[in-house]
Amino acid sequence: MLSPVTQKYLRNVEVTIPGTRLATFTGDDGFYTLTQVPAGPRDVTVSYTGYDSATARVNVSPGTIATRDFELVATGSRPAASPSTTAPGSPAGPIKLTEFIVSTEREGNAKAIMEQRAALNVKNVIAADIFGDITGGNVGEFIKYLPAVVIDYNRSDAPAVRIGGLDPKYVGVSVDGMRMASAQDAAFGGDSRQFEFEQSSINSVEAIEVNKTPTARMDADSPAGAINFRSKSAFDRKGREITA
Image 1 (spheres, rainbow, N blue to C red):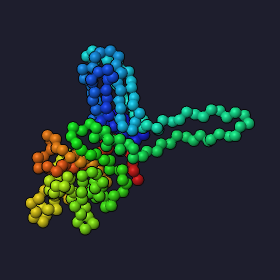
Image 2 (image 1 turned 180 degrees about the vertical axis):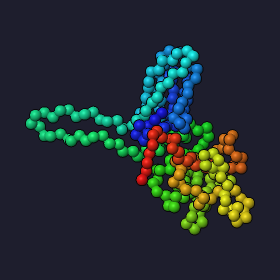
Image 3 (image 1 turned 180 degrees about the horizontal axis):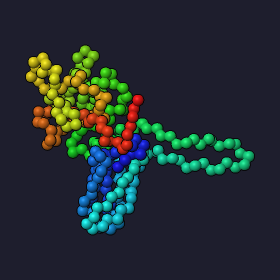
Image 4 (image 1 turned 60 degrees about the horizontal axis):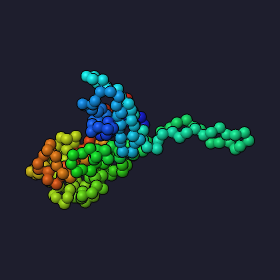
């Protein structure tokens, strides 16, 4: 699955075969796999929040793999129909310019919403580019807008957060699923694994997941919840991008 506007692969796109119970979601690389599909011509439907749904007919042969790629278009971004020819003597019509594309935060919001829909637990997912520039790039200043999240301020800094009112030391913080410990506490002889957000920067973060309920793969020492930073990756998009 690919967004032709942003040239980024779309994860958690819902893929279904109408008339059956076969359904799946795309992975981080935009790929999907449907197994045990009956042979013959089958319709494949894909849906993604904020984008127009698409349906394609795929011929499935026994014992073979059928491939079908989709490019999803954001709702309302399809070009309008060309105006009719102006009649002789009537006022001149509008000047038609060449096509240009404006990409907004809608793509980031759609990714976050679909991530929540596909989750097995209760969590909030928010794209890092929604609120624009954050003071000092502090992640704490960003996630303070999420429900049930309270910042433990140290003067004007936001070093730690509480989830559900519990102490920050009961909140696990990870980057791409890898647990992070607090280097600052260790430097001062502390014995806490409380993560402090001065160690991180939101500039390299694509999305932030705040898990309110644990899953089987999470550490058991995070009863308040767990926060995971999803890093930006060059493999999330097609082709090359240079930012100057």
